[in-house]
Length: 232
Ligand code: C5P
Image (cartoon, rainbow, N blue to C red; front, side, top):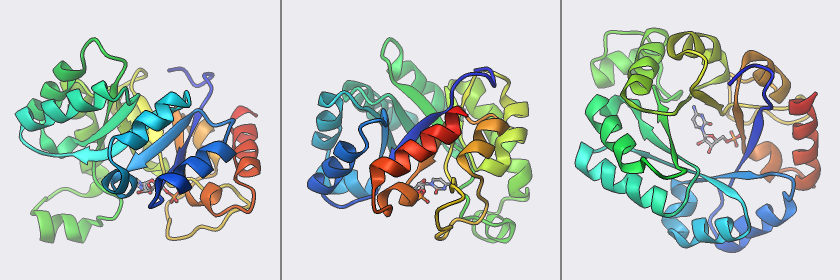
C-alpha cells in the first residue's frame, strides 16, 4: 500500500455486553471497521460478529491465536466462516502455524495479521520470562519478516515500530497500529503513542483506537475528528 493511500480507522469494542457494543457501533456510523477482542468475544461469542456483519461493518477479530498448526488452521477457517475481514495470531507461533492459517483462509476475504512482541514486554522480561536473548527492537522486525514470508497479510505493531517493520516486510503488507492518541484525548496507560496524523504520515495502513472514542462524551464526534486527521 503506498503512503498516498487512505489510512483506515478501526474502533475498538472493548466492552462487556452486546447492547453496549451495538450502541457504540450505532453512534460510530462513519466508522467502517471495529475490533472485537477476547473480552467481548468471550462474553458474546460469534453472534456479535454476525451482528456487525449484518450492519455492514467490517470486523477485526483480535483473538491472537497461538497453538499447534492444525488447531490454528481450524480457528482461521472459523474466522473466515464468520467473514471477519482480519484476525490476529502470534508470530511466535512460527512459520508452520502461520502457513497453516494462510492455507485455511485461501479463497476467502479474511486476512491474517501477525502480532510480534506484545508491547507489555520489556527487554528484561523477554530475557527472564521467555529466555529470549534479543531485544524487542531486534525481535520485532525479525518476527515480522518471518510472519510475512510464512503468509501473514499484515502486522500489528506500535507506532514507533512502523519504520523498522515496513523496512523488514516491504511495501505490500498491512501495518495495523494501536497506541494511537489524538492530541485532544488522555494517554490512559499507553506510553509509546502517536496521533492519528503522525501514524498516517509514518505509513500506518490502519489505526486502532479505543478509549479516545469509547470514553468521549460524543463518540460520533471523536470518530469525525480522527477521520479528519487521517484524511488531512
Ligand atoms: O483504548 P486503546 O486505544 O488504548 O485500545 C487499544 C486496543 O489495542 C486495545 O484493544 C489493546 O488491547 C490493543 N493493543 C494495544 N497495544 C498493542 C496491541 C494491542 O493497545 N501493542
